[in-house]
Length: 294
Length: 132
Image 1 (cartoon, rainbow over the protein chains, first blue to last red):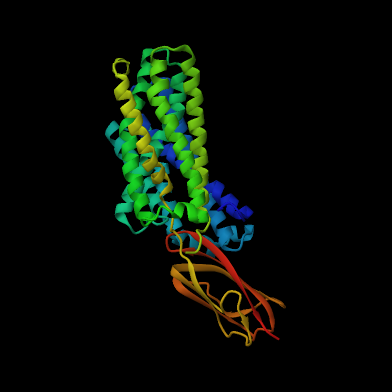
Image 2 (cartoon, helix red, strand yellow; image 1 turned 45 degrees about the horizontal axis):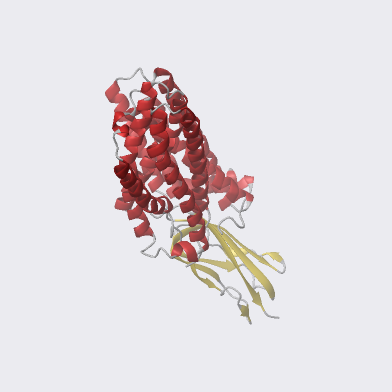
């Protein structure tokens, strides 16, 4: 499988890439969630804004670390290469450099969009620009590069996934105080969003998958790369089942005031978050390690 | 709350089934980005595993899409081989290296790293031998 033969530099790049993915998606999703849930309590809104800013900062740190690690890897795997200007230039001039620049600007813009001192219209415009730049950055590396239509699908897919991921911490907190009608309404509202979110995810992802696999799903089983991809699919299936359980059983039970449902919902959300972390890690391995020779 | 409470068991089941059906596609979606996203070595000169009667004048790597080579090391029986021309440089599908001196008989290993046009970093290597 793709994990065999991971040298320390590749392992470091996988972790840095996973960290960048997680942080950037949480930052993007945090902003989207804030816009979609204006009824959050002031305390929850402050916590969410702070989390979004921290995620954006972590994303920038991970991006810069990734830059150094890529140079180190390209030079043969040593710290001297990590600070070699020629290798840093090569990474900077590559598609990875383009991703770095776009994501960097986007991640700087997100906290600005949350600054309450600016007029609402300006904040919304800056936020939208930041989100688009970050999502565009993801599409600049990999097979979607040079394919505008596939890039749009990937951006849509990641945007929706980020909303889902960033919704989990606030929903976890809300679930703890769901005895109040307002909190229960937030949970139900997210469930209603899910009815739109999942079909769109399906549309974007299904189209991308069909295109990228060239109509050969068997590649999932008969290549080492595909087998690792299958691990990711299994995790995704678990995530969707948990999401469905929350939407149709646990959230309605919490809204009805069933005492044990609150704890069950919080556990379910925590497991969902864990699955997402694993999915991001597997994605980072897939993105970092070479695919098998055709 | 009211909305959920008024859902009939049938419609809940339908929605549940729809959710499960969506799951399969969604899984594909999350898996999608990168199945064939790398350049691949199509040929090497000499061939991987070749046993040569004469020392090659030139070592070459060919890819199916452009890549920028950042490391190209050749190790032989006398240690690292000095190259008079190396493949480090711009994006290209074919990269060649020329040993500074005629290679002595023995086993050789070529190790390379690079970055593809789509931003993916890659590494690889191959061995060949020159007979006495």
